[in-house]
Image (cartoon, rainbow, N blue to C red):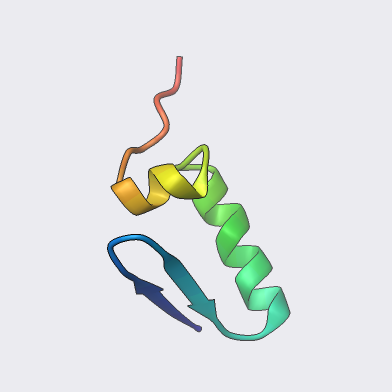
Length: 45
């Protein structure tokens, strides 16, 4: 699986199950894809 992060987008390349698994992992750290691009991690209360 490969992840390409540009200034305004993210591209995930891999098998469908790999992409879903990676998105699930990142959803624990970032609330939205926009936050992921900006690098703003989720703040837990």
